[in-house]
Length: 285
Image 1 (cartoon, rainbow, N blue to C red):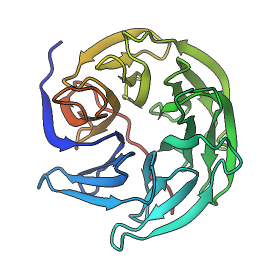
Image 2 (tube, rainbow, N blue to C red):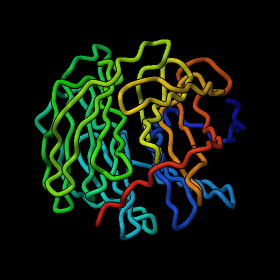
Image 3 (spheres, rainbow, N blue to C red):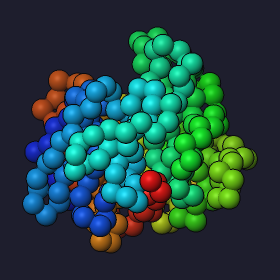
């Protein structure tokens, strides 16, 4: 199947965590290494930037209009109007010195899930996955991770996907919307480097899991059982995360990183799919 794929004139050192603001038809995303939070207005094509005090692994939209930002070891609330950050929660304060927070996403129950990663060249399984409640309570859910990534939920919110970019695996869990507990873990795929190490991800309304193949240049569509059913070749060598957007939720933006000496490395990509994506919840703060 062929797709209309567009390269936008926006480049990041390490673009990640695109999140769709349907109310304002804008795409929020981060540049982990800039470090900065960006907002791209689809209609005007204007790009706004909020510099961050350190690496920012991921973001989530809040019901108040603020932005939840995962810095190295803490969650902060960004007020886009003033640019001020307000501390919300400490995460992994006693973890290894080489760790930092990475991929995060607001779950269907309104909690914020965020994982850490070993940011050293050694890349050991020293990272964890956490759930942060609207009250600021931090719950450790999974450990033994190298680079936590790929958080996404099914349409009904009862299935959670999670990946380890260096593990290398994609897992599926049953998700309890009342307690936020996960159970019935199953490794559904162990992608090869040629298929693409699993980076950031999103889900569609048919129950499939779209994962950025950061080592291959592919956007991969996996079934809930772990079958690779489709691969879309992207014009960037290292895609990092897809995000469904638009009024019909069929326009996908994909961030990427500027690692390889490639003319498109780090660029933002836009493409149209035939299937709609699952909207991401907002954090009640």
